[in-house]
Length: 368
Image 1: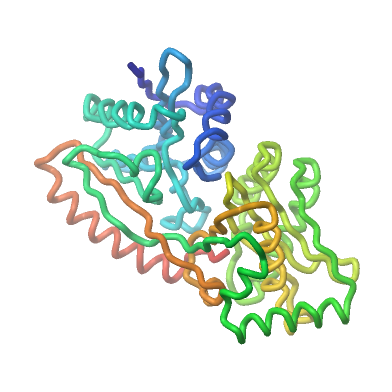
Image 2: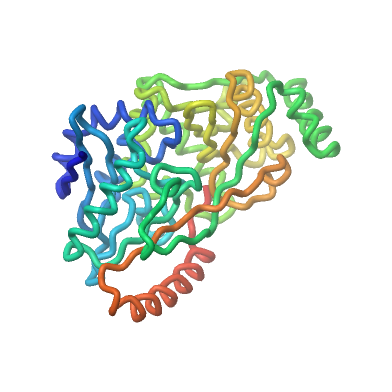
């Protein structure tokens, strides 16, 4: 039988990190956003409210981790750490997925222990609101108590990859396929072009400022703040980039033109899947080539060559994704309330809050 304990301070959660890393590396449904690299960095640099992680242990050691926190305010609302936001952009999570980390073969046992602990400790929380869940994740992939509300919303955009690059090219719209080939050939004919993929933690640390500069140049050029606009955000992403590289989960791409870095793309990787997180490129002098498009195509080709079966482009319904033929997969949200009599008023308040957040996000969400 699994034992669950509540972790309320960072040092105690950090002590679990080595075993958590091992579980995360072996979990088939894990994403880069559900493990210790992402969640510990997120809490160190973006935290607000109170840490409320649940750790599950059995005879063989660590069996699961639920990285949760309690939002500030009187509602005692528990959410995933990954649903924290960048400074000045509350309501738009830095993560694209969130989930339990569980030991292989113990998925059902960890889910059962998770819901049992919450039921036995209703005085600790009032609202459980867990979004960003993949449909077949560790928590959402199994049964939940009858009182838990389950709904679909938002989602991520991705591609199923064929075995070869030529097969993938044939899936593209003919006009776009011709445009992509023509612009790539034009760039290579008129300039010296090289691609660079950073996977080493030391090199990733050295190149982090290049990533931020290219990203900020791209977005500030169109009046957007960019995701690296604040010091807490830069500290968070720097730590994630370096630690993801150390864990073998990073691919930081650069496109070099005539010896100068002209475009970048930050990817994470998992078992048979690549995750496109953000990008950037220099402005006017290379606009006619579409550097972002050229680098994206190169990373797609590299993913196929490496045996990836999926290329996850995460959140954001943008034209450049649709031109590649992406398919949307909705996120799931699980919600529960600790006091049934209080549930109706809470639901009404939540409805108002959701409308306000949706309006706010449409105005000031940080694009990446």
